[in-house]
Image (cartoon, rainbow, N blue to C red; front, side, top):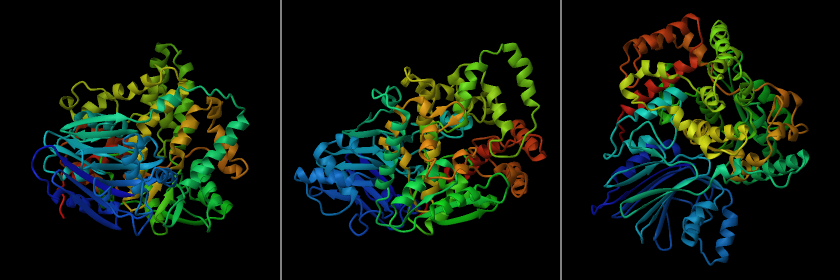
Length: 631
C-alpha cells in the first residue's frame, strides 16, 4: 500500500510543492520504501511508496505519454496482467512491469471507462496535463481511503485527514452531523468526515475536477446484485461448487506479489477459509498470524493454532497485554478519524506481528456481511415475530425485565445482546436493524455534546436511506446491503486500512473482490442463512478442508478486553484524564458521562463500548484535531 496526496489549482497562481512534500512526511508510515513529488504550474502529486509489485521500476508519481498523464496510486490491481495484454493489442507501450502504468495506459485508451475494468483495491489521482483535468477514483467497496477538500481556489485529495488538515486552505471545523453519527454508531457515515469541509469519496465512485468544477459519479452499483434473482436456479451443490471455485481463483489472484505474503488467522471461519485456499496455492510453507489476550474469553489463539496445525502453516502468535493510556493515544493517531470499534486494537497488533515476517497479508474481512454471519441477521428474523407483541407488554414487562439482567464484562456478552434486542425490536425491521448498531441514543448524545451541536439532524435518516436503494430485495439482502454500505465501508475497512498501514503492511481482502461480492449477493438467501445456521454455503464448502470444531464453533468476534482494562490497569489514568481533560467535543464532566464511568468502574453495568467510543473521540481530538504537523 501507499500514501497519496494531490492538489489542483483553479486559479492562475502557480503551485509550489511545499504542502505535497509535507504530506509525504505526515504519511511516512504508509510507505517507507520511497517518496517523491510531481509539480507543475497547475497540479502537484505526492506519493509514499510501499513496494509490492515491480519493486525496481514502479516509482511514483508516474507519467505516461511523454508526461501528458501523471498518477499517484495507492493499492493493487489484480487483473493488471490481463489488462496489459489487452492494451498491448491496442498498440500501447510500457516501460515498467507495474500495475500503476497499466492504470495510466488504460485511462489513456478508454477514459473513465477504464475504472470499471479494474479488479483490485485502489485509490488514485490522475492528472491530465493536456486538458487540465483531475480524475480521482476509489475501489468498489471502499477498501482504500480517499478524502478530498475543495473551494474556489482548488481541490486537494489525500489518503488521510491528517494530510489535508496540514493544508492552509482547510479549516479545522468539526462537522456536527458527523459527530452525531459517531456518537450514535461509533463511526462516521460517508461521504461525511469528522471535519466539516473534508469529504470521503464514496466507494465505487470517481471524481472529475476541470475548469473549477467538481463532480462525483458512480461506476458500479451493488444494489443491482442485491435485487437480482438468479435465473439459473442452480442446486445448492452447484452454488457451493461455483463459490468454492470463485474463492479459490480470487485468492490465487490476490497472492501475486514480489514481496513475502501471509494471512491473518483468528480461528474464525472466514480467516480460516482464506488461509486454507492460500496455503494450498503457496509455493513455500505459508505464514499465518494471530494474537491473543491474557483475559479469559477474549483470546482465540487456541483456535487459530488448531487451524494452523491442520494446514501445516508457519504460524506466529503474540499475547497482547493491557495497553497504557500513552500507547492508546499513539494508536489513535493512526485512526485519522474517531473510531469506536475496539477491534482496531487486535487488528493493529496482528498487523504489527505480521509485518515482522511479510509485507502483504490476506484478511477474512467481508465474509460476515456477504454470507450473513452476524447475530443481527438472526435478530432480524426474530424481530418480525416480536414486533407483534402488544406494546403494553413490551413496555411494561419485557423492557423492565431486561434492565434487571446483570452485566457480564465480556465481548458482546449475552446480556448486552438481549438488552439491545429488547430496546429496538418493537418497531419496523429497518429501525430495529439500525438500533442494534447504535452506541448512544438521541437523549444520551444530547447530554454528552449539547443540543446546539445537533440541529435536528438524525443519523438514522442517513443510515435508513440505503434501504430505499433496494426496495425489491429480500429482507436479508436489504440488511446485508445496508451493512456493506455503512458498517463495512465506514468502520471495518477503515479499521483494517489504518491498523495495517500503521505498520506499513498491505492487507488484502479476497471476500471483497467485486466478482465474489456480486455472486454472494445474488445467491438465494437459503445459502446464507438457513434456520439458525449462518454462512451456510461457506460451511458446506469448508466441511472437508477444515476441522469440524472450527466450522461449528460459536462466532466470537474480534475485539479487545477494553471493559476489563478500564476497570483495572487503565482506571487510574482514565480517572485523571476525565477529571482534568479539556475536550471541545464531549463533556467529560457532564452528569451523564460521570454516571457511565461510575456505573462501569463499580461493576454495576458494563459500559465499556460506550466509554471506549468517548475515550477514542477525546484522544483523537488531542492527537489529531488539536495537533499541528511538523516536518
